[in-house]
Amino acid sequence: MKKNYRIGLIVPSSNTTMETEIPAMLKWREQADPDVSFTFHSSRMRMKNVTKEELKSMDIESDRCAVELSDARCDVLAYACLVAIMCQGPGYHMESEQRLFNATKENGAETPIISSAGALVDGIKLLGAKKVAIITPYMKPLTNQVIDYIESSEIQVTDSISLEIPDNLEVGRQDPLNLIDIVKDLDVSQADAVVLSACVQMPSLEAIQKVEDEIGKPVISAAVATVYKILKSLNLKPYVPNSGKLLSGEF
Image (cartoon, rainbow, N blue to C red; front, side, top):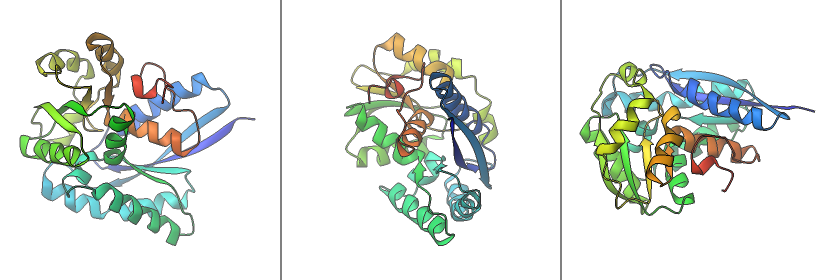
């Protein structure tokens, strides 16, 4: 008998990619295992420009979103705005995940919580990578905060590219296949793995496997790492075809 899982998505209001890439990967997972299916349910937090001030204001709304989604009795909730977590200082993803879990528990529907920030750090470590090179759409000061956050988790960032796109809608309009050329300007020589998109709004899924095959090193994104944690939380094999090494089924 087919088992259906409800995936709750806590989404910045201007995000258009989380609700495309995460469902796309889980639909590929359905094709690999016809005994499971997924539905997707979202609640939004207001945010238009990727600035520290808007991100902090947006994060406050995540509690409301968690409660709303717990009304739908989702099986897992994913809070996917990586930089909103990382700009608030090292380790904040653990505080955020616990607070949101408590909100669902108080609503009588305790639900596992995943953050893309925590998922990315954990995913890099699962790959055995001690050094990474990253691409972000952020302005350089925010990229630096992401780097500080990753490095506070004992992962060295050897090189980074900031595309410096402040408008979150514009971030979501980027062609993921452009990353195949952009990554050529990223120094990956010292890196154990590459974070092709340290942002769930910047599309990268179509390029993940292509870049990994080209450079011969594991390639990950915030969305890929989030899907890994979603599948693990549901006690499902974390396998999605054509999505990079983390979702190869090896881990």
